[in-house]
Length: 218
Image 1 (cartoon, rainbow, N blue to C red):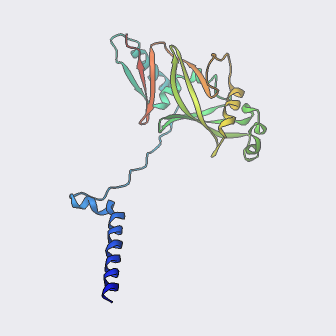
Image 2 (cartoon, rainbow, N blue to C red):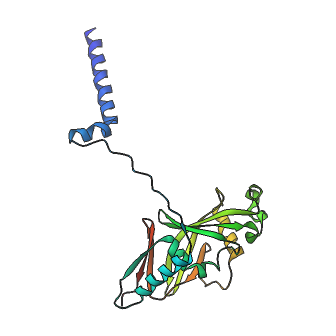
């Protein structure tokens, strides 16, 4: 019986040690006078309307980057930048797009608008997904911005959603070609939409709810 009691005590010690290790995140901070770590607050996504006023604000900020004595970078809200490049982006967005809004989500620029699906060739172009949609739906594009050559930027569409359904990635280039207008610069990725920008814009970065443009340092 003494042996059995010893084995039982040892088992309790092992179980207790394992439990203490498993829940160490709760009690270790208390040894150092700290509190239990709190869960990170969810990131709030802010959709901004694309307006003429926003385009003017962005135009002024971009023009200042062209000055030799001006700042080397400019932070722009996504709505303002989208409004500024809308003249170029309009060539790539579906013709019926209206009520356009923009937001930064993670490190991507998202643009959403009300669109007639006939711009994409009709619901039949969406395969089995087409039967779920009406004539007009909310379409969302999510992608990255990059400068590929002096004077040329691209918006690479990584995600495309119609209403709350994601379009399969292989279908995205096909749908983009349906709405694209004008000549397409050679060498671009299939998911890229080209946009003209001032030649002195050297880089663009999307993060923390804003878009930062950097000018060429000479």
